[in-house]
Length: 237
Image 1 (cartoon, one colour):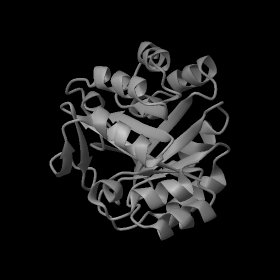
Image 2: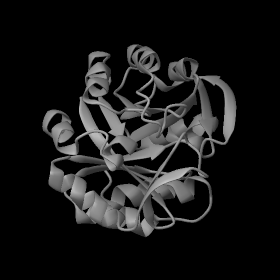
Image 3: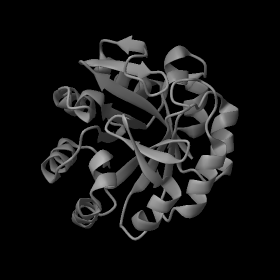
Image 4: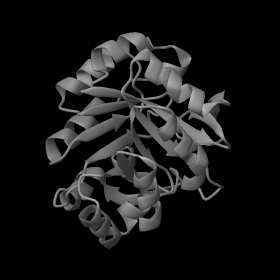
């Protein structure tokens, strides 16, 4: 399993939110490109970059996303507000290795089918989950759709993976939702990326034991709750 630092962009800054709430911002760093270089310098070889403003139609951090991709040699997966083929192509052309698609992918299955066929093994579906139910539009709208039921449709597609964020654990340093991640890993026919609540090395090892391919880490790295260098040494690749 690999560990991937999260770089969440809001109003030009790198931020961390508690519990998936835009009103509860705990971390704000004004130099996202510098943050990306820092994580690479520590030893991480992959970065997870998300434009939160684009996800909520509150603006765009697209130039910063592109600058981060150019500024490091890390493998970057990028997303946030990706709702059309043009944006997928822009991110891939900018050098993103994978493109993360969320709301539209969940709500428009035909579009996801088209994107997966057009860009095989390059699309990661982001399924934000609160107590097994998928939430969209920046965690605002809760759908009557269970994540395991959604996987039945995703498994037929040539996806690069699925990113499952346990929003009810996000930013709270309370540990990941291990039963959820284990069920998803057992049900998915492609790599599973886990996010939400990861706080300790034991959390990372527990996710690895459950078949998770990658763990996205945010708050624990930014607050120092977990030693970034120790994480990079064991889970960089």
